[in-house]
Length: 75
Image 1 (tube, rainbow, N blue to C red):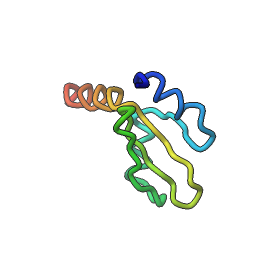
Image 2: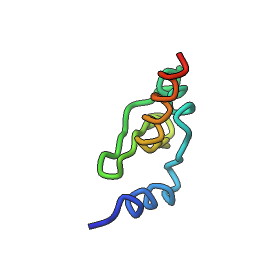
Image 3: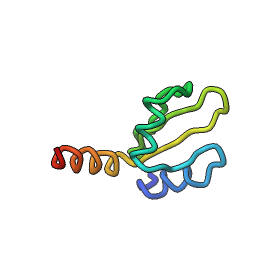
Image 4: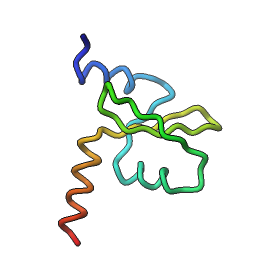
């Protein structure tokens, strides 16, 4: 069975996938682009798929949660 690191590396090397920051993920999620959720639970990744281009952006769940926790404390 592949480790989390190995699973993520497969996506990192895929030409149609790009890892982004939680901020960029949120911008794309709420933006005007035609994006649909395309998570990868086996690799613990949140994802969005651009239906027009077929490209996907991914963010590790722990990075996203860390950002949310930091935002909660800042308020």
